[in-house]
Amino acid sequence: MKKTIFTGSAVAIVTPMNEDGSINYDNFADRIEEQIAGGTDAIVVCGTTGESAAMTDEEHKECIRFCVEKVAKRVPVIAGAGSNDTAYAIQLSKEAEALGADALLLVTPYYNKTSQRGLVAHFSAIADSVSLPIILYNVPSRTGVNISVETYKELAKKDNIVAAKEASGNISAVAKIAAETDLDIYSGNDDMIVPTLSLGGKGVISVVANILPKETHNICEYYFNGEVDKSRDLQLKMLDLINNLFIEVNPVPIKTAMNLLGFNAGNLRMPLVDMDSANLEKLKKSMTDFGMKLA
Image 1: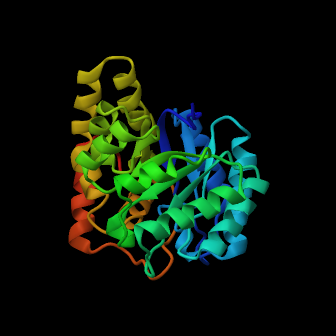
Image 2: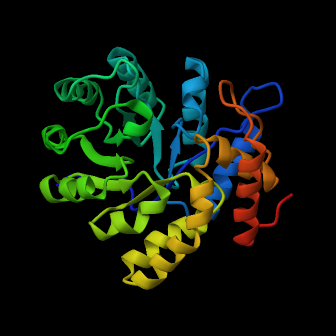
Image 3: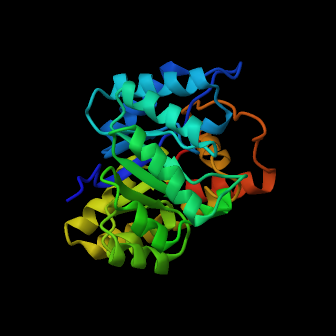
């Protein structure tokens, strides 16, 4: 029986930046403390939402080290260590393990992509290089690669490949993964938390949790406690805000929302740029409609 990394809501945490574009570790510490106080069940550092694609190697390692030390085992820290270069993903994974991360999040290879057979070879090579538990991250809208159910079944034979973050948006595929593998499943889409839980999912790796940690945790907690109506109603209450947090490419809207709330998350790293003015107004409206007070 594979060990579950976490149950509930894991925040895909934003990386705050200073005005000069460097990482704002003081603010990062505040955000980590706020998440733990808000009931977040795990923290994903150096994920897509954390702008890992625009980090240097040293920044990537330092963010993981800082997060691990700040969290101090209060909740699991899951380090993003994926790459489209298998050798580099192995290097990142080994470094994350040495820095004390509790688990790894590994995205499918992007741009150069690969076949399903290549996915098995890629993820197996990484899994063989570390002892940490691994969450496979399937997000074909960003990578151009989809993990098939047959590939999931093959990869699930690896002892330390224990879970899938499913952001395909295909609830039928989620059902098949649940039916045909022993992998834990986490929703990779904030608008599909309850549907994923209904199929036996263990929780969500969430963007909206950056600004609503307690509510995102509660969607899961209500469901697990048998209060399905409360879980569903909260999911639906948050739906418009969730949709507008993806009106432009993540993490542009969530970082903007954090700045609107006075969290001083800082600028985005290019090629990401500020939101279109019309989209910004839609985001502001969904935030105020939800009862948030803008700074």
